[in-house]
Image 1 (cartoon, helix red, strand yellow):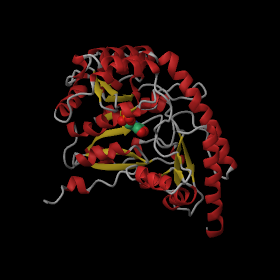
Image 2: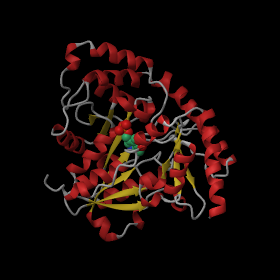
Image 3: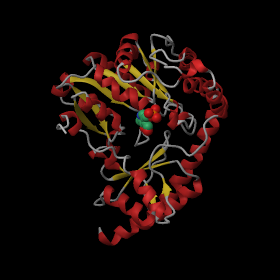
Length: 393
Ligand SMILES: Cc1ncc(COP(=O)(O)O)c(C=O)c1O
């Protein structure tokens, strides 16, 4: 075999990749596993989407290649929804690109903008597709640490000038995975202004835009003046409609950036299954009936998780959005060791902070992907592991 590429060698192992194998092994040993690892809900998608998929898949034309255009009804539905939800208009054909999940688009975008030696600004801890796309494009990620002290926000003025000079992309994600942080509007306005001054593409990952709690309504970056000159935004049906496995998402922005991503994609995929896009139309049209009820389920889980993990001895902020708790560990406890013990001794799967980059050390993430009862049980087990460190630390 020939040696692998430098690009390949620069990729760390994907943190979630090994978890299903370890989970199977525990289940085979008879362990009662509680899986709070991935952001992958255990709840049903909208019934209308399931029906639409069944109906559309019986139509021969829906089974053909989607190509870049895909199912025009999907583009129309996305465009109308962006208008209704955020008051922003995107042309269905020139300003929207259907994706096979937003991860796909987020990773591929860098191929259109990053040359060897170029830098992208990657928040850390953060979703791994930003670093992955950069490394696969032979670019260099500049990791910006998100910490409680900076409210988990990237401050471009704290990035060295030489980095800013070679920076092509800034990835931002609010509501944030894994920290569950949200971004104030004046912060977003400041970032848009700086990206325009510095000529940096602002890649705004809005995967959790529909998962706000306590009345909080996350914005689109395009609600900010000037964003069209500088931003592309990613949305997904995955979290909003419990449709992670369907691989259905979109990006929107000015024609130039959308065309760039579409062209890259024309060499790597031939479009999402058009019946899935038809189901996407049904899901989007079910928003009013489906989403508020679904979010209420997650909010109840959040409340249960915050209370139970606090009772178990952890410090928990109450997140305003997304589907995670980002929980600090006491000084001196490695998150990898803690999470490993929690898995092996107690059968609870959570994500160590380092799974999202080095700056995630000292934290672990739980996902609200189990019932309040199971979240409470997981907290009790996590509390036992925490107590077991008490003597050792
Ligand atoms: C921040 C963020 N962006 C994007 C995605 C990708 O979602 P999908 O590829 O399912 O659309 C995820 C999934 O966990 C995520 O957490």
